[in-house]
Length: 383
Image 1 (cartoon, rainbow, N blue to C red):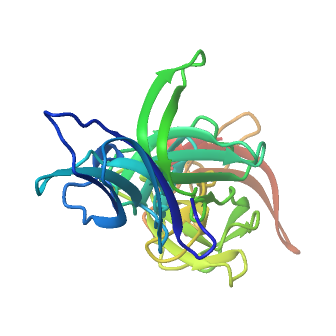
Image 2: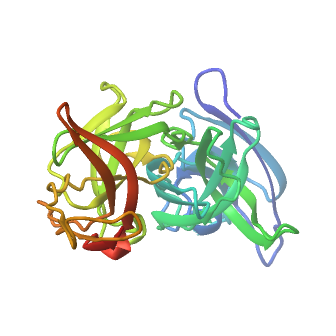
């Protein structure tokens, strides 16, 4: 136990059987503070220090001594009792006196997929204990005082993906990690959700910094500006976001495709809006926004907003109308045709024909008497 002078006081009890076949001249106590090997056992290359305590007889005995330093993270205090006879020493088995907590891990990156309810965690296990692992925790603002164990990362595993059916778009979601030495198991509960249990011999403090997930960006809108440009606007939702990723593509499946969308990241110093320039006209563009926390390679992104679309087709040229007859009787009909011309190569989406009255005051447009849809191409119609 710690003493009043910043060190450790140790009390050791032992039994050293001694008879004519195994005589003991002296028993000596030694200690070492070192990083343990697998199973929190003493490493073979540990450096031992005499405790300055020796006994001249065998049998049951006790000794107390002090160490002038404390056990640091990732280390254990081991004690052994050695027997000596005729100058020959038999070294005792090391016993664990103190197990200190492990070094805490650090988050590197988080990626959450709200559609699949999965989270990919990149983290560093800073513990030097060779069989230490990382336990992955989840909690939400619905129950901020309770955390759920959703997975375990083995020693040396820096990235892993876990199911997290508890994710909610409207709640603050956070992930935590801690290092531990021990065993773990997993099973499927009645709701067909995989749950984990751990049996811990040593563990670190929990790390939640870097595990916060920004909320869903709200009120995302897109509007056309000048040719080839759009403006994206959104609301900064919650207080955990420090930036936003704006993403766009000319195909709606870009976010689930190897043909990935273009992206741009801004920080919260700006208002919730951004202009995208240089978009090709004559096609539809798809846009999403997600809020972020962190910076550089250590960005954690929240869920994507719903996909918005905007059509950047240019206005078509004014068509030249050709009629099959110049005069139409009251019960007769006429065919109208035209050629659709577009500067950006886009196809006709819709066409209308209306009555026109020409007077001394000018032209007055009347009722629509025929229309075409995109499947007809807008080339000819009977009216």
